[in-house]
Structures are given as C-alpha cells and as structure tokens.
Amino acid sequence: MIALAQALPDIRCTIMELPSICELAREYIAEGGVSERVDTVSVDMFREKWPAGYDAHFFSNIFHDWSFDTCRELAKSSFEALEPGGKILLHEMLLHDSGHSPYPAINFSLLMAIGTLGQQFTLPQLEDILQSAGFVKVSSLNTYGYYSIVSAEKPA
Ligand SMILES: C[S@@+](CC[C@H](N)C(=O)[O-])C[C@H]1O[C@@H](n2cnc3c(N)ncnc32)[C@H](O)[C@@H]1O
Image (cartoon, rainbow, N blue to C red; front, side, top):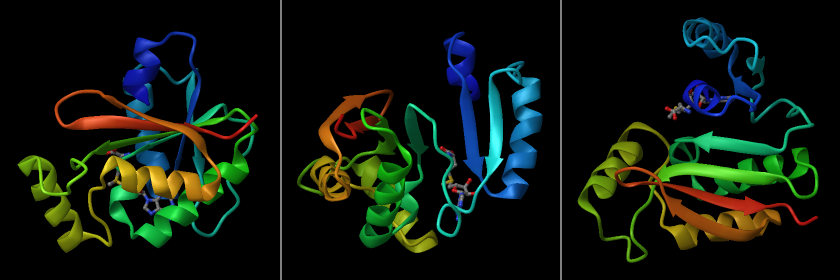
C-alpha cells in the first residue's frame, strides 16, 4: 500500500490488519512519507465487521494462508462490504491451471501447506472462489516474476 501510494499521488488507502500490525504499519507509512493518504484500521477479518465505503479491496498474499472454505468466507465478507461496482484484487503467485508448474509456485505452495492452512491457487480455483461470493468479470494480470493480480467486480 505504501509503494502504491507513492506511485499514485491521488490514491488513498487503508491497511486493514490486526492491532499490533497496524501499529507497526503506521511507522512504515510515516517513513514512506504517505501518512496523509494511508491510514490503518484494526479489524479481525473473521470476527469483526469490515469497514464500508471503499472502491476496492486489495489482498496481497492473504488467500494463500487459508483453506478454500475460508477463502470463500473472505470473498463473501469482501462482497458484502463493497458497494456495487466495487473491485476485489488478489495478489498471489499463481499455479498454472494444471497445478503442476511452475516450480517456484509449487515450492511456495508446499511452504504454505506446511506453515499455514493454505496453498497457492490456480486461476480457475480463484475464479471459482470469487464467483461463489457473487463477483463477476474475473480477470488476471501478470505483475512481476510469478505474481499476478486476479481482479473481479461486484455487479453494479
Ligand atoms: C502472509 S501475510 C501477508 C502480508 C502482506 N499483505 C504481504 O503481502 O506481504 C498475512 C497477513 O494476514 C494478517 N492476518 C492474519 N489473520 C488476520 C485476521 N484475523 N484479521 C486481519 N488480518 C489478519 C496477518 O497479520 C498478516 O500480516
């Protein structure tokens, strides 16, 4: 979010995180010189109401921590908190559709399976999760290295 705010002078962002991470994030935000446009909100995303009024929700390396069912819950919470026309953006290292390549994404997926409740996803898997929450117009854009942004929209 800090790099995004530095690159796009008109954007305003809020980091939604657990309280201790919000505290830490505020230090980095100040160091990055974007305190006037990036703030934080402490929310336990599984137990508390998500704030409304945002144009988009950006999840970077979040879905890969969780099971398919939990990701469906997250997508549903996002859908409910967004206004019609709002966007969801998932920043993840994608597996190819076969699930058998590329090796860096497979290694990352194994790491997530061992260390968290998650794994890396294929685009069709994320598409299914997003569509099951009601999102439409799912698309994917390769960003850097093996990372992509998978985006979708709440119908207007
Ligand atoms: C894999 S890290 C991703 C961090 C960062 N977005 C990135 O791209 O590197 C997952 C993040 O989810 C946050 N998190 C875990 N459980 C959470 C919860 N219940 N509510 C809000 N945030 C949570 C953690 O604090 C952690 O920063």
